[in-house]
Image 1 (spheres, rainbow, N blue to C red):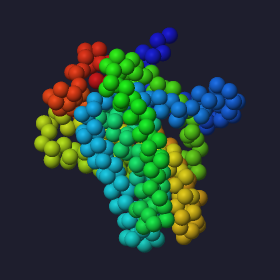
Image 2 (cartoon, one colour):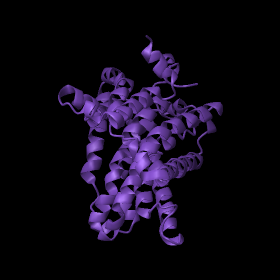
Image 3 (cartoon, rainbow, N blue to C red):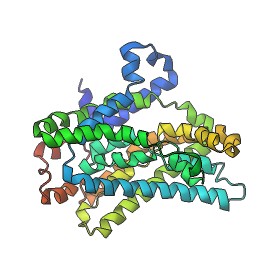
Length: 351
């Protein structure tokens, strides 16, 4: 059986297929993954540890002079996504008669739309992006947790910036970055992990998804996922495109794939309504409804964000925009080597 061959025929298959399998098992037989030992550690609880190893491998591929483009790209999509969530949330809170948009509360809107799934982003940019796309996760990790939601709701004085959470994401990248820049052989050795580890953390990420959540939240929860996908993902891509225009980059270097990969809601965002209500009790009456809606957005975007990323990738290719073209800017500065033939012909990238 040519399992890998058929998996790679599916756009984003290395990520999508294991993730869906994990979600199916968790929805219909969750106890099957909760038997302890290596099975539970690998297939249920192991996502964070494997993503940490993935970040080390990814950081090793980042040339030291690429840190500027990485920060530029990361802040562009972070700001675009944040602004989108705030605008939609404020429209609901101040301009709608009942303070909601189709039963979606500002709390749920901002919690879902300003947050993103870092593991999904890492996997998608590994398959369809380039070094700066992958490295931008060091910046967009700032939207993990409830901080940006509290800021947007006017409750920033009741919370502290989650500095340690940000540092926890950054450390594996920095370790890989140092090793890769000190030793080219180490960089080549760790390069294998960028694709090898994807299915191993995709399955446990899926094992945190329950499709029954969509039924509980109903149409408003699915609608919130679509808002997150289209509006926040769209503004993230638009903001990144405007940065390319301002920087006067040639059209074939204006890659926005990281904005598409950022169009999701993180699983951690499900806890945000409860955290916000603990900081501001006025939200306590809508916590349950907001939590279900955010959870539905997590499930919806986990399925649709990879599809959007593939569509944007193909749309770019038809216009001569290959994410690898951005590497030319770094090559001109003598920081990276041109893409080799094997990588350029990688079967995991759909043409």
